[in-house]
View: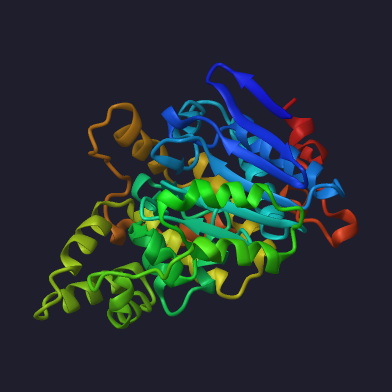
Length: 387
């Protein structure tokens, strides 16, 4: 049987039940399966129901055919809230609360990502028990380029990577291929796209959600992920050297020094891209990622929630709205950041963005399995205040 919720865009999420398998399909291919309020609400609803359902053993997440698994959050939704205080607070709260439950889900999940997986969309891929990618998969967390920050649990995820790869990916928004995702540990299996439907059919025929059983099926179709010699993963020593520096300014200086050496011309476009990004967002993101080295999942999500709300409130800068304008609204790709230089960014203001909220206004992370699905938005002070 199938269940779908309709809005002006059609069926944003389609679910199916086949034996002990539950299938969730992101169904806005023309919009690159952007994550809207409806998508977040439906994901949370179905994942909770299936975790509670003893008959559900295996969850499969995929996207309708198209070039994207999910391109991430609906930027226009955020831009439209520019003049309304906290108009997007609810969807942000619900998304980060959902991220916690995806990471800690009690049943086996498999994501099949055969296309773009960026930003919040990647949070439906990387944390899964099994994340399957193909030669068509393109991953990135490019939030800094629009004046935002690396979120949806990636300040936690990136600190599970070796060396300073997390800082590199968060600050540069660099793209990784499917093979690079597997090689870096951000995905579990590489399956050629022509084999993906056959794999899906086999998964849907299972009557078990046992991890070893599911893994064995996926490995029937997976192949070794081969990375190109030009891959950033082959240049880890330089990445670690440059992105281990204490400040964004020091990272820039290290990149310039390394880029001047013979054979390091590949660093020039990386530095150019960094210099085009919001100075404020760069500094916020570096602090968030660095703090994540000493934070658990829940602490990272609480921190990301605070940062996001403060950014959307333009607490110290309106760069996120300027970035979205330049990319999505006017499409001139010429954002005017304020301030426009790293040197002009007030360090004390960056600290202000990361300051803890009062406990009752923070993201509610469940305390133990008995209370696992508590802390929903409707039980917060925000819900009462913004009725």
